[in-house]
Length: 319
Ligand code: LMR
Image (tube, rainbow, N blue to C red; front, side):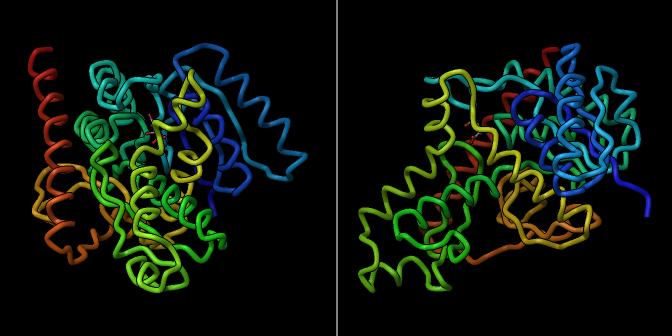
C-alpha cells in the first residue's frame, strides 16, 4: 500500500508535536510547512534524527513552498497567531482570517483531494474561511476542538473522582469559545451518567458545576500559565486522532467542528457536533436529542459562531 502523506501547515509548537505524533503512530510521511525559513527544516531534521530511537520510518521534510505539500492525503492547519493572556480567541479573527485565506489557496492549488483539519482560532469561523478559500467539499474540511474540549472534561472528571480516564466518557457540543456546552447528561463514568453519579453521592453538584466551568475555560487556563502561547500537546493529539480515523477509515464518532446543513437547526456553518469520521471525511453528523436547557445553551453558542462568521464576511467584502 502506498504511504500516506501528511502536511502540517504551521511549524510552531503544535506543528512540531503533530509531526512527532504522526511519526510515532506511523501515519505516513510528513511535510512540515511554514513561511519562516529554517524552522520547519530544523524541526523536521530533529525529528528525523529521533526516528531511529523510536523506530519509525516516516520521511520527515521541512518546507517553505506550498508546492511541497502537493498530493497530501491529510492537511492539518495550525498557521496563524495564538492568543496571549487576557485575550479571547475571538480577538485573533482579524489577523488569522488572512492567514486562512492564503493557506486555503495553497491547499486548493496543491492538494484538492486532502482531508483538512483546522486548529487555528477562532476555530469555528476559521474552518469556515479555510473551506471557502480552499473550495474543498465541506465534508472534507473540519475543525479540531470537540475532541480537545471533551478530553479536558474527561481529565477533570477522572482527576476529581480518582478513577482512570479510560472509564470516563465526556463530550462537549457547540463552538470552541466561551459558550461551548459540556454535556453533563451525555457524559459518564463506567457507563453511569453524571446526574446519576450525583444522586449516588459520588460527586457534588457544586463540584460538577466547577468542572464544567473549568472545561469551558480550559484553553485560557493554559494560556495564563504559559504566558507566551497556548496549549499544544492535547490539541495536537486531538487532531492526530481525527486524522487517524480518516486515514484508517476507523469511523470513530468524534466531536468536531463539522459543516451543518440543517442538523441541529443550523445551516451553512461549522459548529462542534459529534460526527463519524471515515474514509470519506465527515460521513455523518450525529444528532442527539437535547432537552430545553441544552438546546438553549447550544443556540447561544451557535449565535456566537454566527457573529464571528458574519464578521469574516464583512472583512472579506471590504478586501
Ligand atoms: C485551546 O483551547 O487550547 C486552544 O483553542 C488555544 C486557546 O487559545 O485557548
